Image (cartoon, rainbow, N blue to C red; front, side, top):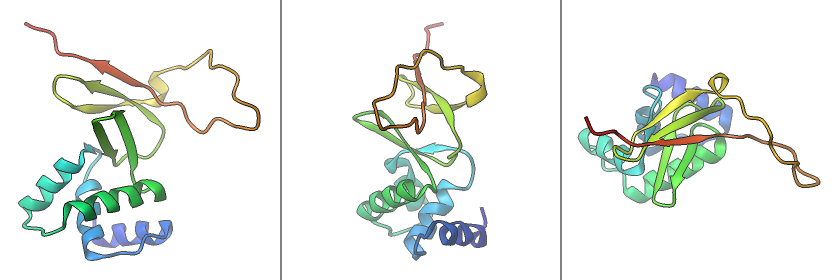
Amino acid sequence: MLRSEILARFDSLGILPTSQRLEIAAILLEKAQHLSVEQVLTRLRAKDSTVSKATVYNSLNLFGKKGLIKECLVDPERRYYDSTTSPHHHFFNSDTGELSDIASECIEVSGLPDLPKGTQLESAELIIRVRNVAD
C-alpha cells in the first residue's frame, strides 16, 4: 500500500501519523496477512528500522482499536494482527503457527443462544484448529 493510501486511512480513522506508525502500517498493509508482534519486529529490523518493541505493541493496539487492523487472539500466548478487517473466519495450524482466512460465506453458523438482555450481536468468528498429519 502506498504511503498516501496509508495516510488517507489514518486520516479517516483519526490516527495521528508518526514515522513509526507509518513504518508499522506499511508492513501490515502490504498484503492480506496475519502477523505476530515478533514477525512485525523482524520485518522492521530487516529494513534497518529502530522502532522499539513497545512502540510496535502500542501502535498495534491503537490500530486494532481504530479498526485499521483486526486482532486475532488464538490462545493466551498467541496474538496475530490481521490486515483484513471484513468479517471472516480462520484456520489455525497448531504445528506451524500459521493463521489463514476462511471466507465468511463458507461457514454457516446456526443455533446461537439467546443473547443477554440489552445486548446485540457484534460478530461471531470461528477459529478452526488443525494439525499436520504424518506422511
